[in-house]
Structures are given as structure tokens and as C-alpha cells.
Image 1 (cartoon, one colour):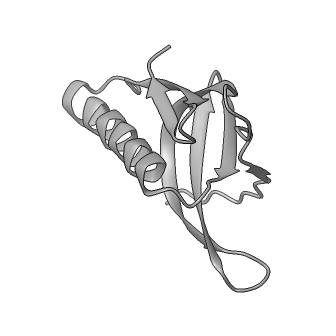
Image 2 (image 1 turned 30 degrees about the vertical axis):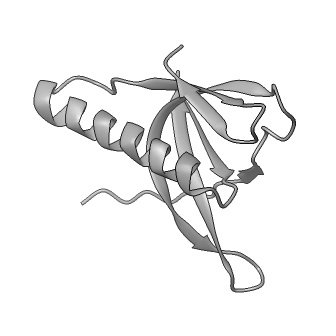
Length: 104
């Protein structure tokens, strides 16, 4: 059995203004978590070069769906090849208020 005792800081989503962009790394987890007011918020976990960061996501179906696809692809990559994660993501806030996700 593996026991992981962790305490993660959930960072606010950093892409606020049009044109903001950031390299996040590999999508390694997505979920819902209750906040202090017993409301849920979506989050995504990213990993790169030994660092692990959790971000509180905005309620945006397109962004969450895209990140789920990247996570699924990373899981498939590990299952199919036995190698590490496949897709790293770079995200930008677009002029229409949506988010563009690309490979770096």
C-alpha cells in the first residue's frame, strides 16, 4: 500500500486578462472540491520537472473539457507505451474570453 499524505495549496487561476498565457506542464488530475462555503469548485493539477501545482479553474465547460481530453490522452500514453506523460499544455486567454490550449 502507498500512503501519500499531502497538503496542496490551491492557486487562483492565473489567466485573467485577454492575452495572458502560461505554460502549465502535464495535466495530471481534474476534479471538484468543496470550498469553505460548502460549494464545489473545479480544479486541475499540473506537473512538470518535479513540481506539482493545483489551480482552481473558472467554471468554463470548454476549458474543463479540453483539460479532461489532455488528461485522458496522458493516461492513454502511459497505458499504451509505458512511458511518461505525452502532452504538455500552454494556455492563453483569447480575445473572445475563451482559452486556447496548445502544445508548447
